[in-house]
Length: 273
Image (tube, rainbow, N blue to C red; front, side, top):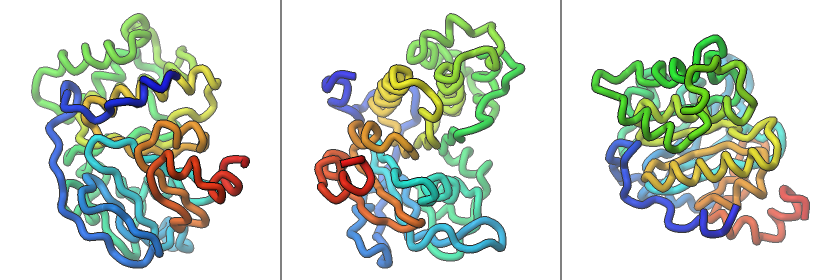
């Protein structure tokens, strides 16, 4: 990927996304780090919680994404990255903290209601309907819409040309990278105000990973804030406006992506030196 691809993200072209708002949020104490959430569009604020009656996995964890940004969550295996994402999406109950979208407290909303509010979520696994065609998968993404979504589908095909070529093919017959494109495309069909991606490059080759990151940058250029969990920390921070490094469910480091890449301690502990 060229350096040019990283420039001028977050422009005002809202051809895929709906017009986005801007919240006025106050960061809560507890993380030990200054969290720049005053202008965040989406923020999971000082979240503590786990699954069911089990132990807490997140401890005062704060993650946020600002309008026009790509924010990535990185850290070692078992750090709670995907759990933090699922908490923001409402897939587990919080014992402490809150989730806010465009200034509105949505902590008590179900995942379905959060989708209706404008959250698009692409899970790591089981994120497509394998027996349906590519086009049918995209049509399923528009299930909450009552308007004509043909223009949005054309925009998805423009973003992912291979999907247009294979639109009548069963999605289960596609490669791993192409399946991920279907999953992201289906989320975009809802016209999300914010897009959340859980390990979008898991199990794909480095070349395909670069291609997916390029497409994610293009989505961000439409103005949609993107919150992403990634195991490929170095590559993810390279395209990120903002990064959150989690360790054992807690914020260990946070800052601009380029600053975290340059931080000697972050490099030594999480990026292989």
